Length: 526
Image (cartoon, rainbow, N blue to C red; front, top):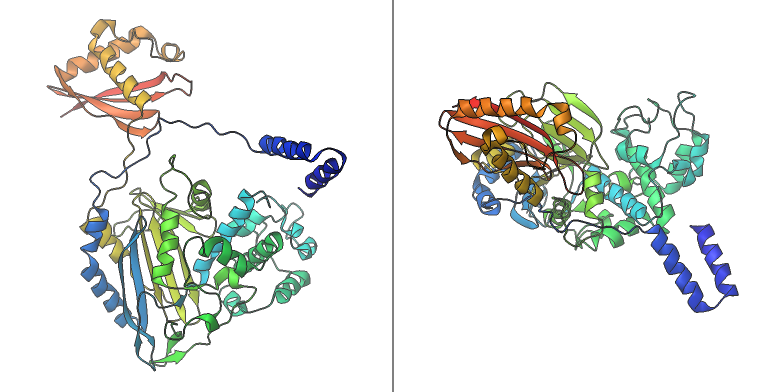
């Protein structure tokens, strides 16, 4: 980029000013590809959407659940909330901020959210990436020269890049709780730590291992690339645009009547934990916020779903937010259970500052916890349901909720449904044409809707025989069900007969005028 700007400046000195302006526009157009998109695309939608109203009905159940959990785990105070799309539909609290003052927790109370800060750091990196100021493939040493002397475990280790730091695959060892105590250290301490040599537990790009140090390095990179402190960048580029005006970095800046005091439970009593100040490790866990403010952040993440043609709104593109929600190096937990306690394996992986999981029931959630001396926090959002849950507490390394019980309330008691994908125009058209070909009996499959591979994969005669057999088994066709799309070019439906159904699956080609490339059907006896 610097070379390009120098060239343009030199060019401007030798030609007229308007020519320079034209050249810049031409160069910019070359670097920015024109995007053509479909105006026919229909985004997934909620049918008979009553999510917000339904969730409000569990408010008292949730309050009782949180209060009981707080008492059982000796937690001084908990604040919590549930977001539906962009609305905080449930927000409440139990307990106290300060044991000595007995000041009650409210939804505007300020808690340190610890590692939940990491996704803000990842968001900053992606924003700088989207602006062309860095690449995720850049070696970390480009911005932190001290990394040039890093001692790798093996000769064939790949060079650590920014994406390794984001996904915690740089090979650094898990550093909880050591990293927590580094929160208020200076940038010079961080650089000295790197310069003296970091010890690796794995080779890079090999496996996931949680690293606070890696996220401290990302914070430093943000400051180097943006030209302002990490904390200032997050405030100006993310917090302010989202309206998060009551989110802080330094405990001394928080109004005293709103600040949650941190405790640990020891010797059957609460003991004060030191209130850590902000510093170079703030990018791994320094933010202080309230349920009311943080709900805006959760709403912003939810706004990335589903993909659609709406105008962008917010500090980061929707596609980049969804990139944050994509797991890297996924792992299978065969011993997991769902919220009902039923065995249900889970595939989980770390994305960019967030953990992503999907269980055997198809439920997907994106989440991150936070823990520092005196505090515990967590948030989870379900992209396909447009719902987010968050809770903060003021007890050392303590999860602030019993998540599966809350999920049971939301998904079992309320029986909420995810968005449904509408049928694309071409898919509906091909379905009607397939129904027509089935109705032709011996003259079936004569329509020009089939791809070139179709009759090469199986002869016309053989396919017609299969159709005739399925229709004879089904008897008189009485109706055709609605198409259930799997995506824009694939779906299923049924021909309902007197004796049973003909279940049909078909998928279309990637051509401009998509044709049927695969057509499977089977008789299903009722």
